[in-house]
Image (cartoon, rainbow over all chains, first blue to last red; front, side):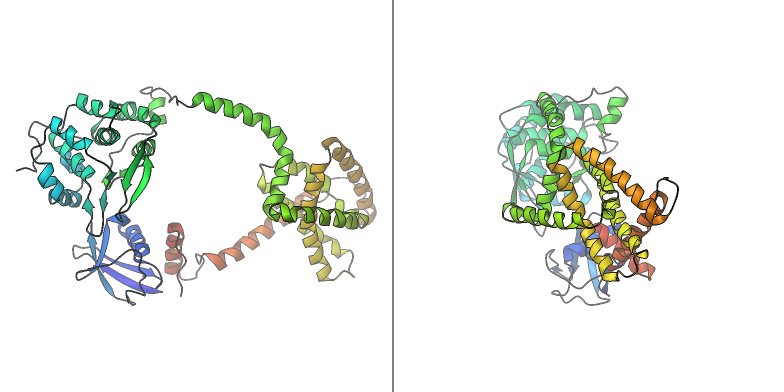
Length: 73
Length: 392
């Protein structure tokens, strides 16, 4: 289990507990449940890399405590 | 300049009509090439020409959430705000299905509740195929009536949040709308009549179906039947005590809608078999477990047995069995009364067993029982989203 921090730099900072073999799509669902936005409106980025929905966190080498950028579609 | 709403336009739902589409999507549409090239300076008439050229509907797609031409035209309609007659014409036209859907979508966004139901429900009868663009860029097949259903029942479609409409039954209750008459109503009535006739027959057939479900289709069926017949004979010679309550079980089996009863029966069967060895102490635990298993097998066999025989015969057999059992029971338990024996105990016992089993199951599968409340909470959320529990 890892804990990921998502920040949208506009006041929304969310800590989400998830498994390493969850996909980004699952992470988006968890974030949506916590923030109240719709899951398909959320975009997770790291600098200019947009993270794709079907790839797991492990494959993106997202570790415990790592910060991701939260954007909206 | 080009993106400002027509100054003569009325406000919809208390806001600038273009604000029905949320900010991010609106900016995306304004930056879209289709919007800039094709949708510049459109009027209601020229809009129809553009709408006739549509060949798919959808929201945004791709990594950068590009809007579809359908979205751009919806936006244009919100901007110029055509008259209601024109929109109704869009909906009523039969030739171009995408124009129809465009009109329906606009009506859903801007129309009053009665208008929405009044104009969109006739479209339920249109079964034509539509092409829909999915968020990942691929196309999928849908139909006009599916799209209309989505518009009327969901509150989000094509990446636009649809304004709230009341449920149909609220409007029917307040008399604003009449109850809906489907075009397929007559067909449904015929179907219902046929179903009622068949239900009487199905009461027996349902047992066969359950057997199929458990044992698979034809190759094994023959073998199972033979096996059951043999073992039935073997077990029948043994204890008539075990046949206790079988009559009651069989009658309950008839009410096949109550699956709950079946579970209770199985529990009772298990309980019964556990109670018995109290008297017969030489039977070890294994024997008891065997009997549990056999109890369940026997139950299934009993259902088949009941199915093969006619009702009247089994009923008389029940009575005979029950009398015999009563006599037997009285002898063994040395009780004078013929009052119902285990009912209160049985129910209490049966209820405890499934509860204990359920608790054990929960600890294993969901993780929602984790001692740490945060993790339990997280697991509950994950379970509701359909994800596996956290691996700790």
